Length: 337
Image (cartoon, rainbow, N blue to C red):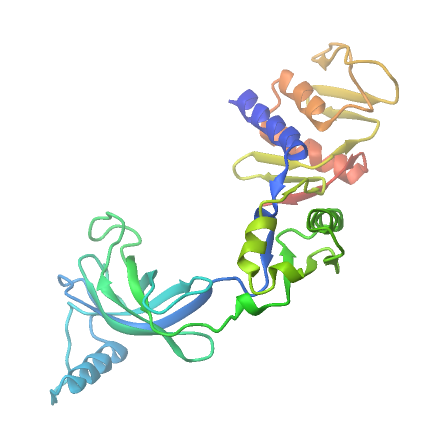
């Protein structure tokens, strides 16, 4: 199991540096994003698994009957009804009549939303305006009644968009690209590729996260075609040397150009030395064996192979990497999850 883990770790380290990515996978376009919407509603038709009364649910039922032309005199209590919060995301360039998925979450003491139906619920944006109407039968993913998380469900295509967001994307004279992972080297490469492929000084990297792109004259009023073109440009993205470790699961993931400086490592019965010489790997020490030498030019994968050969566990690797970082012999960021 240890050897499989380390093998995966080495593959990740080597492949990250060798591949190119499409521009569309590295950046987002300013203004092109989902917009969250939120609403309060009632779920009916539950088989005795709804809220056991409560002011919010009871008042909501009373208001519902009043809107339907009824005027109940007494408090309405039903275990077949549940108060819920409905959430969803309007996709970029959402249009009237388009349907989106929604999530329904109980806010009372209902034990399950299985088999329930969401009544028509207005969904509002951050500006307080109604952008969609939600309703429909709730699915809780095949869970049986009473199982864990049965108080959260979804309704595929459960909301209809009633109001569009103004974008005028086709009229834009410029667009702003934002890197998903800030990096000066990658931003500079994107600027160079865009200017080279478009044949002019159209792109400008403002900082490690932002590239401004002027729409060339031939693509004005045809911005969609331009975006379809540039989002498929291949970029060799740079990556900061970083090791992410999860001590609870023993998972280790590394990326970037991790550098090892000359150092000697002793951990339990293991002793490894990275020497400032041109010698190749020549041996190891475990319970009295000779020292295991690794040249200073060796990569992190060489160190992991050496540790793996001695049966080091993921916990051993985590401890060793932390000590190397603290010593200054490991040139990389370490993040603990």
